[in-house]
Length: 259
Image 1 (cartoon, one colour):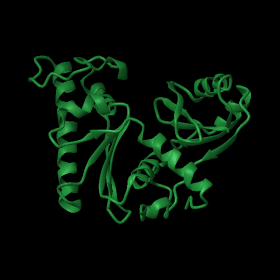
Image 2 (cartoon, one colour):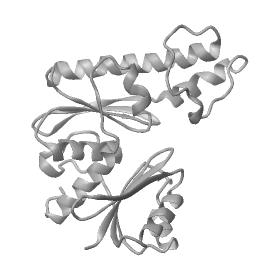
Image 3 (tube, rainbow, N blue to C red):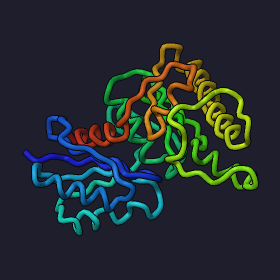
Image 4 (spheres, helix red, strand yellow):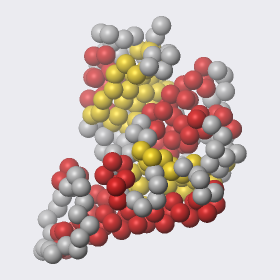
């Protein structure tokens, strides 16, 4: 029986999994660019027969030619580029402005609905941090967008360039010191990190006012593990929520109800 590749092409990296038709994860990884992912998937064919690739990709050119990259890497498989639908599987509905809801956010909503009929707050901590509010009846009530930790740094650092050097995303400390900074770099790092966490705490609490105090918050994205200890509101890390959504969409299509 053939296997399925799931690919999340984000703004700064590409995550992938290969799953059997029964849902078992046979392989996974991450790459800086889509071409690296294509090569990794092609190498998986030594142990797996991949006949379908489901892809979530950010808007713009990044990942637009992924099908050609797969072909160049020697992987012949049908490619399903997910499109956001106003009506999705398992009763998912959204009135978000047409063409503006990110595919990754849509996939996370699909993943949540695949688990059950319950209210959920979905936080994706990536290049941007998004918060999506999903009601128990499957209605996406909208969401919020914030700059992520690196974007916040990059927005302010140039204005303080005489005191603060540019920073790569890999240069953030693994654990954020919450004490006041005694130089401008530390003050910006801690101020923005704790400020971002505080803003999210407020948005999660506000969302629970609407959904109910027991509504879970699921935290995903590349900065999820860094951000989680800074939050005061309860949140559970779900590391592969977008890939889980791609899997759910592939199962819905096989069942004839992809939406």
